[in-house]
Image (cartoon, rainbow, N blue to C red; front, side, top):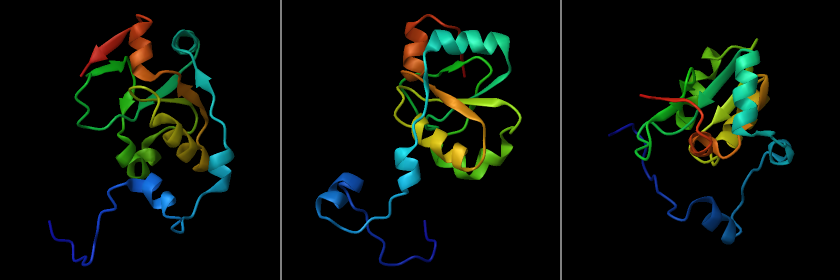
Length: 139
């Protein structure tokens, strides 16, 4: 694919290796200090029965391990979040999830910074939700 860019390289070790070389890096200190609440699956299930919670699953499009989703959740891969977050309601409480809680905290921080009412992330992700025998749908 050609986009007109030249002299583009990949840093294979990613951010950890970049830091190991003491290369300069800009870090959003406010986001680093931000604490995101972790909601246990059964607590989230109870909340969802009482109130209208907007659940966003941020797993990648090509996630092969499992096709189970929390019933009623929407799928917005983390890589698409910056383009799609405006589709989310600002008048509903938002909970984010992924497979095992590796990407959802980052998504939660992003949405909070954009002014969305994020109440937390699903502790343990969809993996724990399923382990607790809570309902899912396959897509």
